[in-house]
Image 1 (tube, rainbow, N blue to C red):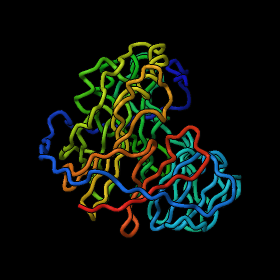
Image 2 (cartoon, helix red, strand yellow; image 1 turned 90 degrees about the vertical axis):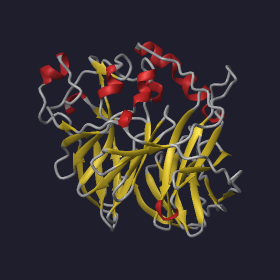
Image 3 (tube, rainbow, N blue to C red; image 1 turned 30 degrees about the horizontal axis):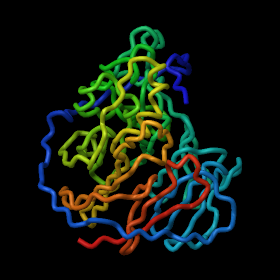
Image 4 (spheres, rainbow, N blue to C red; image 1 turned 60 degrees about the vertical axis):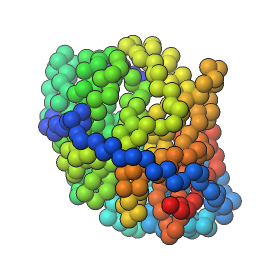
Length: 384
């Protein structure tokens, strides 16, 4: 898959301020491990649905499981045991339909779907209430974007196309961002990893990006450009944000202003982190599959506040130099209780914890599977 670094810039113009923080200086919690969970007894949810299922992922919304089918563009609802409840949003251009989506979020009894630069909001009746295009350029200068790109100019950024997540709170949406600007991008410029922000704050009433937020941790300065691992995963709580970066063993806790308050975490077991560094677009293309299938990196994070638990998945890396399939990179799950590691266990590939219903924790097994055409959800209990 080819990233268009030399893409011609277009649209009208946008500027914003960027908050700074200091991930390299934040205090870290070096708590001793207390491994009491040796394995998980996983149960696979049996879904009662006879219709066609395309590629997608599962989200937990209250006590319901939502399958976001990104092939047929519809939202299927199930109860916690897999019983089919109905199709709440289907494909189309009607008031309760959606033409296309890639990312989903829910907030204040509303649902939000993102497709490229478009954010669509649906009300409690699952009817489209508004749709806005994200505007990075509303206050930028095109000449500066082309000849003198600045890291704090929103106009040089775009939505992050892979591993993006959308969050909505208080009338604003937060999307991950990146830059493919020829003068400042994640393939050719080490300075990018030091200065580029992580998120764009979008005013949902106008679509304008009004602020740039976040910063990468210092570990990126140990490498000369690792764009294959320029991905990060978060969980937004009411007043805190937990964020984890692919090459970094630490988990960072941010406040609502994206200022880092604390960090904790332990290195995964047997991880091969000898990443291939790149400096050209050709290298970026050539090494992508090697890095993603044969190296170890941290992935999805989920916080269960009421249990003081944090789950984080990671890959260890596949030592077979001839293995290039995404499903062959062994995956494990770290379990933290009160920021102390209490479990590090093997899990199936494409595994990510999505929440809790009753006594069970639920995990999606669909999201990263390129060949997925089935509903895969696991549930498990913890005894510790």
